[in-house]
Image (tube, rainbow, N blue to C red; front, side, top):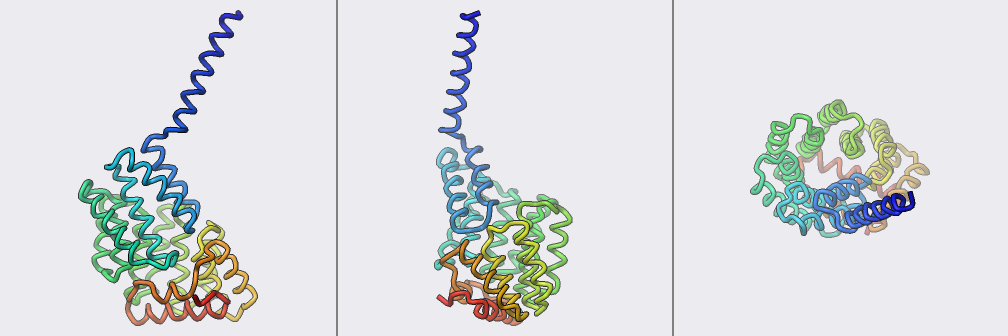
Length: 283
């Protein structure tokens, strides 16, 4: 029995050593999924940097890992469009370069087409971006994020009243999606654009309930509350946003590379006005 016990102990130690080695030297797929997990925790500078680190490690192991390559592009796009940096143009240019490389390697990669749509829509090539959304949905009809981006495009086109329909379709397809908090933010902003501030607060509050680690939700909520005259609540919401992204300023919003129709521009001005009332730093 003692020999058998010792043999089992040796096997257990060897198995544990193998497990430890796997943790110390994860493969590209494991790193990719760790990056996805970090990205889904919340769109803060910290979590996005963490996600990019994992994706880049995966690419160091496998330079042609299409999923990791397309997701690094998504991270760069997020940094460029979500007012998380003072250098949005650089991040958007990097996103476009990376996603085009991904599509050269895998022309039918639905997420890569969606990422390209994000870049195009948010750099004033809205109709080209919408075509990329449609391409992504043709490849993957269940890609709910593509419906959200169609809603974003409607904001830019001055048709913010149509955005909610696209968000509801995304939620219908994937009601418990880890990205739902972003979709709710888009719906909330569309309501700000059309001065439906009470409805905006409902969407922003839903988004915060889904994921509290998205600064823009808190700033949108603060702006809507301020425009409704609910100043104490607005200031509290602004502080929560700044706790997640201490570098955020109104200047970032004003300098963002977004040029939409007059109704969209007016909506941005309402957003800025609300944040100013709520006490968000000018920068």
